[in-house]
Image (cartoon, rainbow, N blue to C red; front, top):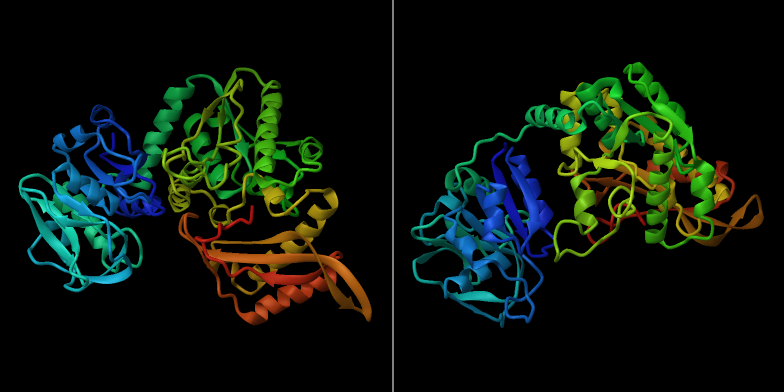
Amino acid sequence: MHELVLILDFGSQYTQLIARRIREEQVYCRIVHSDLTAVEIQELGAKALILSGGPNSSFEEGAPQIDPDIFELNLPILGVCYGLQLMTRHFKGSVVPGVTREYGPMGVHFPVDSQLFEGVSEGSQVWMSHGDHVDSIPADFKIIARSSGDLIAGIAHTLKPLYAVQFHPEVNHTVQGQTIISNFLFKVADFSRDWTSSSFVEDAIQSIRDTVGAKKVLLGLSGGVDSSVLAFLMHDAIGDRCIPVFIDNGLLRANETEEVRSLFEASHIKIFQHNYSQAFLSELVGVKEPEQKRKIIGRVFIESFEEVAAQHQDIEFLAQGTLYPDVIESGAVSGHAVTIKSHHNVGGLPEKMSLKVIEPFKELFKDEVRAVGRVLNVPVKIIGRHPFPGPGLAVRCLGEVSEDRLEILRAADRIFIETLYETGWYDKIWQAFTVLLPLRTVGVMGDKRTYENVLAIRAVHSLDGMTADWVRIPYEIIAEVSSKIVNSVNGINRVVYDVTSKPPGTIEWE
């Protein structure tokens, strides 16, 4: 059993970054509802708590609150922004509505020594994002940080391991934020670094064996990093009782089926391929709304797997490569978080299905899955593949999905990816792809007027898919891609490059 940090989520856009920063310190954490009770926290075995920020004012009617008994558990607690204000008000300090809002980078200084800020430079830059602020601290607390605007930026209890900061240590703009988080974990809460890829593999294999027993497991294999690493994990756990099923849904990239087959044959893992492309495409006729596409694809995926499962005996489980960002973005973690998009292997599951779901990676981020793959000796060519969405090209073919539009998209995508390989850029990029827009523009080709489709190309840097920045690919490479696509793919006469980061955009367009 790993030592556990629970992050009580009050709806901050940065909550997932807190989790990332903790995981980077090889400490296990989970994001949970902010209304968890003290009894539930004890039952989960938490060793420390973090209270996230949030968009609400603590004065708003209906603003999320906290079970007051949590502060009596004698657990180390770090409040962040909104969490600081909750802690202050609980202990009878004063929080006032902000006349002056602090937003953006600011310096902080430290009037007294504190374990939380050991190694943090005087005047270090932090990231503020608040209106309300602490006006006076509660009894038995001390001020451990002030902002350059002379507002209270950090407090600590004099007797209990309770700390809180007004800024966000989890974001990159807080220059020494990782030091602050590390100090809380190891100097205040006395964690050991017991969350490693090797320990995860050992625990996951044992858990899979205990769950499955002598039964068989159908594994939904897409050929992407997550499901492929899962196939290796399941194979190590239960051998041939795991049946990796690759469903051709008609929404795959060019030559995807052949590539997946060759990769797994080389690793001596038998996979079962089934073509259900007509079932998927017929259900998507006339559908344009992104969420509806995802729900349909999720449903048909499960129906397909159940049909395949009926061809085998003793199958009771379906293994999926669901990741933590999938769960977070689907709104399945916090009652205060907004659903960004549903994922085919989260929000698309029907309420009634005949297979029990196993999701060993549902609390891992993408980079953690890749690290697990290295422990399992998964081939580098699999681990290094760019992420590919579960709904496939359906969410890159904006508007209605059809065979003709998919063929245009496949041809353009192949040119983009091959060019990135040829120029040495593929491995420098976290994810790259093309998007066919439901938009036509006028062009001139061979002295003739054309009225054809617009294609967007996108490439991003990211660690885990939760945040991303667009890649500054050299103009000459973008020009080469554009020229190749317009000259060789019938139906496209204009190429644009997406220069939007996440946030405010998402990585995929739908």
